[in-house]
Each structure stands twice: as C-alpha cells, then as structure tokens.
Image (tube, rainbow, N blue to C red):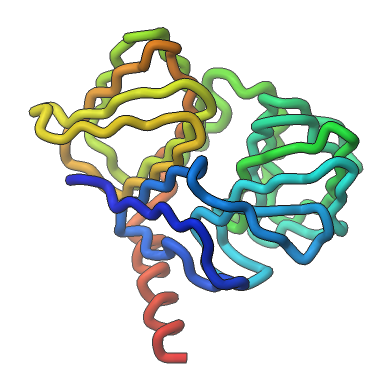
Length: 244
C-alpha cells in the first residue's frame, strides 16, 4: 500500500494534533519542510507527529541555533533523541553527532548548545510506564531492546539489499544519510527515500525489500512501539479533539 505523504510546508502554531492517527502510515520529506519557532529563543522545530500543545506526545526534529538553550524540564513520559548534527549539552554531559540518548520517565535536564548549534530527532512521552533505563551511547548497531520495543542503526553498503519481514506493532524510520529504494515483494510499488525522510508504518502484512543507493544508507529504525492499545488511544484522542 502506498504511504500517505505529508509534505507539509507550514501549519498553524500550536498544532495540538498532527499525524496523530497511529493506524495510518506517514511519510514526510523533511528537506521540503520548514522549521518553526518554539517558545524558547533560538530553538526551532519541525513537527512530525504530535498529540498535545506544549506538553505533548510527539516526534520532532529540533534545531538549536548557536548558543541557544532550553529551560530545565522533567520528562513525565520519558524522552529519547538522536543527535543528527553538532553537540547537545545538558547538566549531565555532552553528546556529539551520532549519540543516542534515552532519558527515562521522571528524569530532568537543562539543554544548551555552544557556537556550533545542534540538530536532534526527539520523541517525547512515548515510553512504557515501567521503563527506568538511562541510555547514552554511540549510535551504532542495537541501541535499545526491552523485548517489546527495538531501536537500532542499520547501515547498508551501496547496492546492498535488506529483506524485511512483515511489520507488526509498528515501524518508524529516519534516513540519517544516503538513500534507499523500498519495494514490496511483488515489486508492484517502489518508493525512494533520501536523507531526512521520516516514515511511520503501523502494520504491514507484506514482505519488503530495501536496496541502498549509490552512496549506501544509514537508518535509525524503531520497531514494536505502535501497539493496538496505542492506536486505540490515538483514535480516542482524535475523537475528543473533534468533540471539543
């Protein structure tokens, strides 16, 4: 089934619901999207999915301009992020490009950057209630696996093929660098993904084939986090928003 393509160039702020329906596949080409201001000076964001206003369950690309900072805050639903560019700093340490961080529920920090600025891919308020593991690691290979959710970095050489089994309980991909082509096992649908593309898929019964482009590809891949319960909750939130 072809992906739903959401190449939104701008949208009203705040955006309480964006790609909230977890039963729908999404594809955003972030290279064609615009960053928007946040309440913190020098901190810009590109929203990918969102359920809520300033306190939200969300997936966002956040850009810190040189010497920007963000107020101290508590992660009531946890936080995970991947540093895409520059160095991210907080009161616990410094995290250069290619660092993966999971801050568990109840943790808090005060982010800031230096003159090089920083760009991160961040997910908020999406952790299981029992998760209490703090992770700070170089982004390579398996990053997290609790038996339900699995996060990893997948690197493919130029032209290398990756055969992907049917997807259950969701899959999310961000193209860190390079490109790849995805086809179903019958080659009836073909889609190319390039650096900066974000894809979210709830449930695919088809096997898929991914072939790396001429420069290879590096992917952040997250699986097993879009459960039936999460989908039902997202649909309830949409219904509530329509009734309000």
